[in-house]
Image (cartoon, rainbow, N blue to C red; front, top):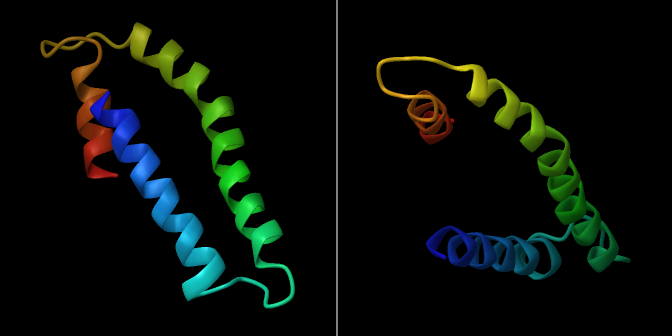
Length: 75
């Protein structure tokens, strides 16, 4: 729940930023802001299965997921 709440707040801020504060295009900022948002969602949909596959194959003394959590934290 915390992850989804954080994501919603972050996406809301980015959308306001790209449409009102620093618009990508002065004539149609909503279209390009939406394009930026959906491109991130598409990238997430494509990368998530690979991350799950490789994290299932990871074997460390910290477990399968902890190295991936730490890498995501650093990134």
